[in-house]
Image (cartoon, rainbow, N blue to C red; front, side):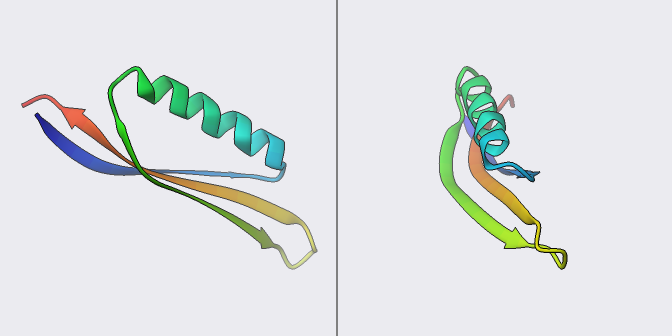
Length: 65
């Protein structure tokens, strides 16, 4: 079986929203047989002192040949 590497980026203003989106994505993708390579979280601050929360999910997914 052949796998392709992919990345999915989530960016929101609320950390609870971020977890909800990431968890939904992970639960949906697990049914398709993907493998998690890495998960990275990042918090940044805008010029107007607003926090932005991001999550990058690196994974490999099987493809049909």
